[in-house]
Length: 616
Image 1 (cartoon, rainbow, N blue to C red):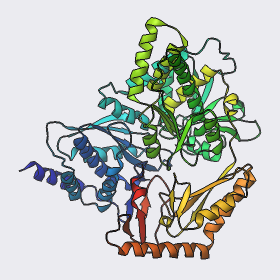
Image 2: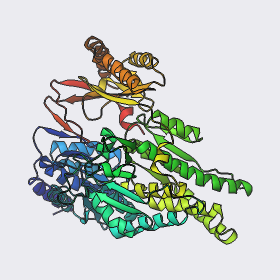
Image 3: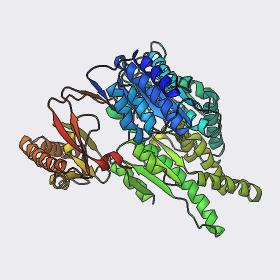
Image 4: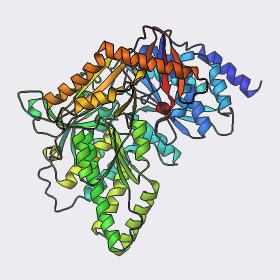
């Protein structure tokens, strides 16, 4: 029997044990596939096969993580980590959707043939598996293993219970030929943190920096791992609450970074005794981080330090170190190639943070919403920093810059050991080892925040004073078809329906420091509205006024008619290069990103512009 025939037989036989659920449509997004765990087995099995094919295609180690991050405990999900440790390439997302939703295992073989993937070669496929602490994780992990084992020459390696960033870090390290066990991860974080702490200027007054830090672990895997990591840290006293131990609470229920950032209230397990103490919160799989301070004994309100302020702290510190190096280079008349430091945000970043960063003289650019866009743009710089307000982000260093820093460090060690320039190079190298360059990592991010606060001699109060956030308001407006709204310029300008952007501009101009944009949801038939202004009342009114225009049935029908008519005319042009026609079935539930399900109550034709799918 030929290898292809044998492979087909194995996949068909294995797939028969995992029939896909009826009436459910899954969509692969930034978070992979997510849904109620009870209907995920077939999806996870097929993604296991997909991960094996990806490994065969790239001749590299691939990662497969089972988690639903900040979703409720009854949910779960699965996503693939590519060889560089980042998310799976967007080119494979349409096939992931197709194979999971059609349920025809032969499509996998057709795809493998199209991608010139051969089975049974000399180099095996190697997939690292990880899962978080959800009760459903173990059974889903077994389904993933069966999918991987259904591919000839594929090997599944169970790395155990991990945070999502740990799994991504392991994949990146394995493909770079580095040690990639959990103990190596902890050792790298603790040693680089120690290096930064050793380099804290001796003249900095650190009395204002409380050595104690209280961390909300969201009753997830992050709290469990932080308990292990803190044993290896010096100069920092960490108390972990909501660590997931029995009796502490339920995963993501009234706890975690997502809850704290959205609700802006004290999480469970915190109270009056914590007033003024520096606190942090991780999300369910520890890829998001926010800080907060309990304000009073009589209320549950907090002073939130979100991803925008974390980004600002990182940018300020890194700019300072680069300035020291740059000054030294100028003195030596050797500054032909200045280091490019770039800050990457989305339109959801608070306008006050953007103003602050630009006042520092930094280059700030915007991308559409989504980590994949932020990460890709940040990678274009020598040092690229990106963060979303929700606390997900990281710092990327180019290989060229790291080589230059190593060279400068060595040169200065022999010529000017102990000088500020050498210390700056050492600090930046330590940051590059501490921060997770594969993906946003709450544990490594937390340690970098703590090291920088010590370096600055800042309390959390001082940190919050960097700038004052502009009041903002977010709303959702239900619509018949979200694809009728097309945006450009990093989702800040409406292109279609025609005339809608002018309406938004008119409303925005009524309010001091007003800013407003709308964008179609990626997961449900709603239009999201974001508004900022000088006061909370003004921000609320701006958001409501724009939402009101979207809700006007007569107006929206007119927009819908204009757009549908235009779409129909375009669809009749067989060779029109800018559109694709998608027919969506009625009563079809879509699952993606942990967002609410949508239920299309009527057949419709949706025209989707190719640039939206291929945007950088």
